[in-house]
Length: 394
Ligand code: FEO
Image 1 (cartoon, rainbow, N blue to C red):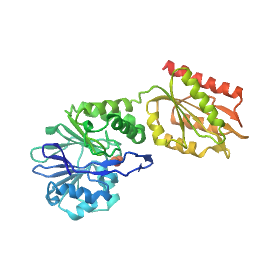
Image 2: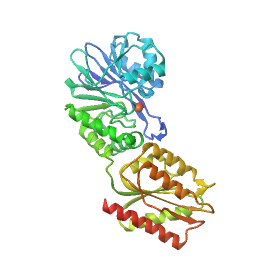
Image 3: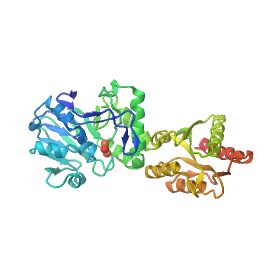
Image 4: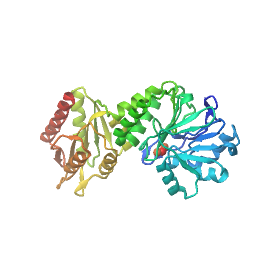
């Protein structure tokens, strides 16, 4: 059933309890596609839902109003988890006027073909609904170039689409109705796997919103819970995450063939433990890359261990580094290590990848042939000490 946010403003979205993957990141708690209905003189929808949830969504709207009475549809973002129901909706209710950014107009046309009734809006423009207004704020790259926020000043309500979202399916619709640790973990995971590479733009957006001096007492994103108890909590978290603030935590990310790289990894763990620095061991065939990224978001350092296989990186390491290159975390100290049989290219390849990402890389990385000797493990310990020194200096 619909859930009331404010007087005559309702959540009418869909809950995807079974989603386990969102373009490559694991969503063990499912997701929601939030859509909002504003019952004013001009009845207005904000965002739709994934196409597969069209029926559930329309039935929820029908509990409040005949969908034929909807005048406006605001499309804050074109990614199909929010726009996927637009074609069916317009087919059934052709008198609705869509509002979107120019980029979104172009994207919607490419997704769904020409003929959609779209009016382009820009930052600073306002749409009057009767008793309320919607102010539009373009926020390119949160999460795509077409994205925008919709703000209702009379309600102090920010409809932020992907911004401030979390992939979590719950019966509670609000931040005060769910487990706080799960909620913040999923918000962090969402940021680490979708938004971290956009951090400078997110800093600009936070400044833009601050400059507009918007009064906000509720943030309603298009994924997860609505922030009504403490919207400042997620704004502050976004500030910290987009500044890429770190704590004295180190990740040892590795894979192994015959336990030689594993032995080096465990030696590193012991060295950081001895220095009383928080350390986590993350084997790539046991831990999904998206969970590693979540841990990495606030880690000050990490080391990547790869065996050499066929003169190359171990496949799980190669895949992880590809993911890392796209997400491009900054403000971190990094290093490479690994074992090899006869050619031993992997450590240099990892080192080069880390340098290309722009990290502070400790060189040289440490290689061990076949099985690490005491001397090799001594070098591994020295590598850990170099990182410990840098962590303590920063
Ligand atoms: Fe939730 Fe960028 O879509």
